[in-house]
Image (cartoon, rainbow, N blue to C red):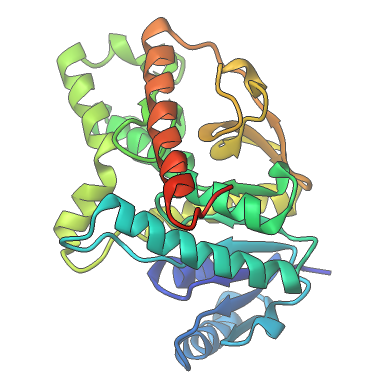
Length: 318
């Protein structure tokens, strides 16, 4: 019996995620949105493609939370992008309210589900979902590190002419300008990246990876990335649904210094083993001194957002 995955938000990312999942065919999909007709239309269009690609996945579009009941995984993509004139705190407050309300509705219909967050600012939104769901932290986590890592790997492959399959890298930390590409351990087919790319050029690639989302926004002008983010979500879902236990960089809750990164009680992008139970382990990776300093700086930036949520009147985080 196929598992049930609900995607909250049927915009570009949500609909494209539904496409990736339907093509693979190992889950049934509910596409939820508050816009009447939109999720139904996209779901029907996608369902009509199944005979062509040979997938028996069931796809439903809905504006009713009742259709989402009994989901095994719920992906939350809904939220607003930052608009001109909107402060960081404005965006934080609006999206925290959206994630709060969505999480409460999800818990009512699917109390045994695993929650995967995409809404920005991601690491802070994971805190909202954790609080509102009452779920244990291993069932609430976020996607960003896979996307950031994929961008870094893509740029390195472009620079060297290598296959992306041979580029081994991790990007950790919060999803933003303070993310931490682990250059010290990055390699192409076992060859250290520092021996293939000059330091100044490598730093330019690191900077491009950090600003990868903004680069796409500037090119599109009316939207943001959706192919790569949705592919990253599909990879996480695959690892959970099929209990693959892949180690993937995700926004995970550290608890008491889990993984040995000297980060406590905070969501942060770290390598995590994903299986049927969600986050089954935060995996330790040796960092250079510079990488450790950068990771602590990134954690401090996330903590600022968490503190801001606590400082609203009324507080959005307790």
